[in-house]
Image (cartoon, rainbow, N blue to C red; front, side):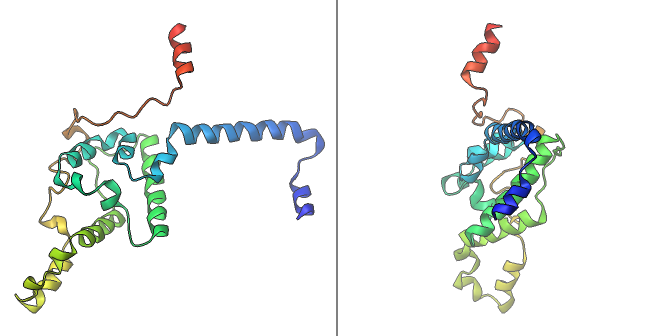
Length: 194
């Protein structure tokens, strides 16, 4: 192990530049973590989803729905069968969203991907299993129960919980919690003084 570490160490004349570059990259990494509010994505707070401005209509429509009383964004859009799948899905989806938002490549109309739709369907059934597996409905016909599970819930419940909001411009004045500025106070005062 010691020999392996020795092989990784730069020659003596390169040590200071390597240390400086390492410090710069470490600083940039921690700055990116700070500016992107990365730790907030580990929580279940709905306000986190508004970090990306394009989610404002979805946040506002959820906040005015009955689901607000019992759910948050992760309740519907993240798997809940085990913790590893949950955070893997969050990381995968979050990195894709962050990349699209950073590159300013977000579409005008946000459409859910197949993996996301599958998770939402799982969570609809998880929370509403009593309705899907109601013994009274099993009495109708043998196929009735199976037919209910083959369809996506939103084929009938299209406006739950986001209403008719389908694009960024459909709710331009949505009132959502504004994320606090990541600029430190000392830097703000320095800018305003000049």
